[in-house]
Image 1: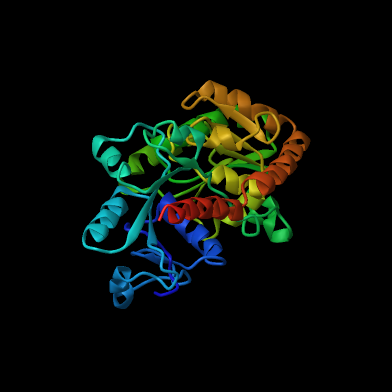
Image 2 (image 1 turned 90 degrees about the vertical axis):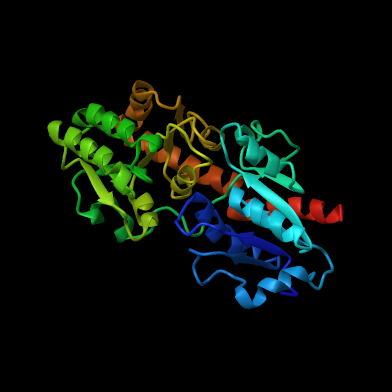
Length: 345
């Protein structure tokens, strides 16, 4: 505990985008910073503090500085405030990805933080306190373009020459229905393409998923619009597709376009979340209004019509992500916020 200067709590057992951020980011931060996680649902590979170390929070680390408690959820802000009220010497930092006005209680919590980070300019526009914008990054070593035979779409055993993908939880919010409708409209005119959908279907969204499968069957496209379910390694499927579609109606930040572009794949996305700030429209992909099905069809069609153009946009996407969104850049941006907090005492 004497070396730990930052605590990254994860007070939610179910996997979420926040959990994914912690899992990817903490190992990079740990290269130059004493940081540990606390909470359930995290892999054993991450540095953690357990029950035996918990009361060490009431002692400052060897540096003499207060530890930083970096919250990303309301529950974690509350926990930090309680710990500080009980005498733990903590600075409180909060990261907000919300694309909406916060509720009164959340605003009350945010006002009590020592520093606030927004994950995009858009999320920052909903904050009523001073903040720094630090956009999420992606591990460009972990997500990378196809390099071997297994990475090729042909290795999937599915039909077609090229694939267009839509990954994430299957639900209305994520716009899975918009993607399915776009594929039903476009695939008959583009016989070389197959659509693949991957993601979890929770019980409350099972009827939604079943209705989509009925639409696909009615269109006679069951062999060309394929539900993969949850796959063991989604990184492989990013390498196998040639185009990625992110049609969310609303989103917090949304990492999947960065993961696709780091894999050398261009992206057609809605303007939900931070998507519009990730994509260079007309170069690394296209951006359409959230919830606009006809606009989504129009944006996807040029990529299906010209695979060479699609591949060229994928190369630009890879270069752009490597330059603007490496995970190390996110870690450096957050570290700069920490240093400002520490400088204030």
